[in-house]
Length: 505
Image (cartoon, rainbow, N blue to C red):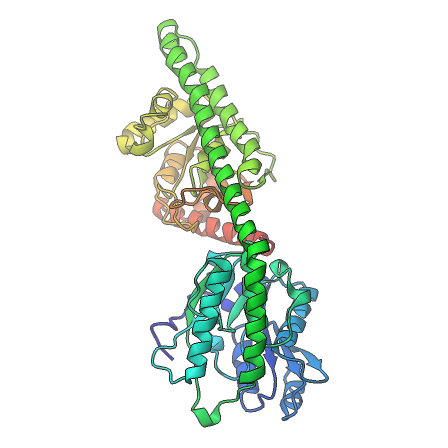
């Protein structure tokens, strides 16, 4: 195997597959020479394996009945790969799985590459993940090369998307999104049919590199019938091309318009906030300075803006759910920490209470649009230095404010939790303040760092249990080790939330 492609992903693959409700489906027909080894190696990666025996006549069935730890589905006669796939995927749905990885029983696919498809699922939940076979240097027939190029070309025509290996059967499917499954055709063309119709329905398709093994020509077992199967593929492609004009393309246009609407709506909400808060701040803040009036109305408006954004987010992207399991009322000042995913984070947290103030970076503090408001609302930049910042924070907490800090410093590009800096935990120790952890999921998918548009994504904010000063050492004796301990806690909680939500994304 190519070691560069087959680098081991450092995770407990079987455990993660189970948590994300992912099984493996292996259709087989007359693969007596390879199927036992393929299943054995697959069981080393995944505990849940469904094998579909499609009417084998070479002893494959007898071998399968002797293997423990698998779910066996048997067709009385050979009905084709499409039918075998359908039976296997339907069985996976019946058993409560959210995703299914399919691989061939002829030894072409390496079960050891399952972690690569798992990683693709973690990065792109709800997407179809295709194992792009490493075909460079592999001896293939001219017919095989033509069939792959032919399939790639027509897939691009039918979906307006390019994939480098549409014929790879090594895939991960989101089972709840396979709406065409009951109507799936019975032979090889079924795999192309699944890709095209899923793309039309808005399912993202992602390729990841995998290894491939082609045995010597005389050892290969192939059930592909060039004449009949090419004819079926030609008929299917003709039908799909016609259907693309009446179904596929119109749906692409509708989704593009929906995305445009979400993005424009988000910009309008942002402008509405500026038009509401800025005039008030420009008039009220100077007057408050002259008259000694309280700045509480400014915090009330900032809180109201955050609540408005949270209330309107379902129109933009998806429902926002806030879980307050411990009944936190934000009455007692604390250091609030949260993982950082997008610009939406600040708005959602602002909507929780009026007495929350953020520590910011210089870019936000000096922003030409809303920097003025933040500076006069006592949002301080972390760059001012720890000693000065500690004095400012103490003054704010003495006045009843909680201080919100993103320990990562900057928002993540991929939603994963980065390094935690120890400033928040040093402040909590020096000022003897509780730490209130917030765990945010989905904001980075709704508004990813490099995207120019809003995506559909569920958003959840979990308000954790306050950690008193005496309990903070349970996360680490020193402040540095404490930051690492809290980071592990956040990763564990975010993984738990992700696994639950992404089974249905």
